[in-house]
Length: 179
Image 1 (cartoon, rainbow, N blue to C red):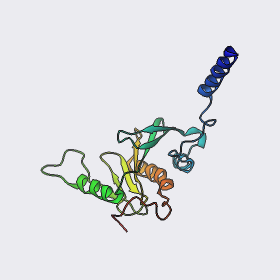
Image 2 (image 1 turned 30 degrees about the vertical axis):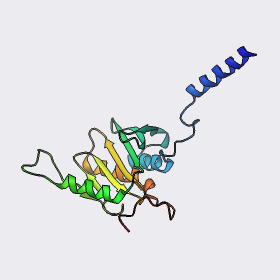
Image 3 (image 1 turned 60 degrees about the horizontal axis):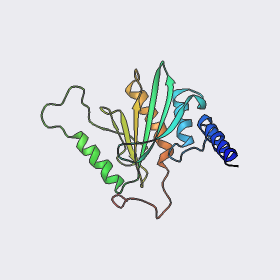
Image 4 (image 1 turned 90 degrees about the vertical axis):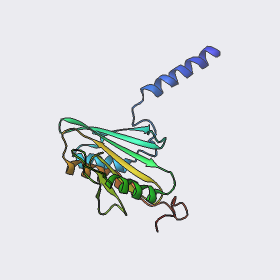
C-alpha cells in the first residue's frame, strides 16, 4: 500500500511539473486583460505573450510578461505595491526624480506626466517605467525592450497598466492622502 501511495505522489508531482502554464491557475497579479492588452499593443497572438508571477525586491507581488517582438524580447514587469499612502509615494517619487542639483548627468530626463491614467501618473524615461495608482496600490510597470522607441515603451506600459487601474470597492481604499 505504501508503494502504491508513493507511486501516486510521484505521478502527481511529475504531472504538476510538466503541465503547461495554461493548465495551472492564473496568479491574481497576472491579469488576463493585461496579457491581452500587451498582445494587442505588440500585434501578437495571446499565446505569444508568456507570464510568470515573480516577487520584487520590495517583496510585493508582480507579474512578468515576455514576448518576442521586432526581433527582440520585450519584458513587461507589473509591480503591485499594496503599501499605504499610494498617492503620497507616487507624488514623492515624481518630485524626487525631478530634482537635479548641479549639472544633469548625460541622458537625464525628468518624469513626464501621462494623461488618462489618474492623478500624478508619470513616465520615467531614465528608468523606462511608468508609475500610477488605483487608489489602493502603487503600480509600477517596467519595460525592457531593446531597440524600441520611447513611444513604443510608453504605449506598451500604458496598455499593461490600464487593467490594473480598476478602483477597489468603497471602504477598501488604501490611502487617505488624496481625495
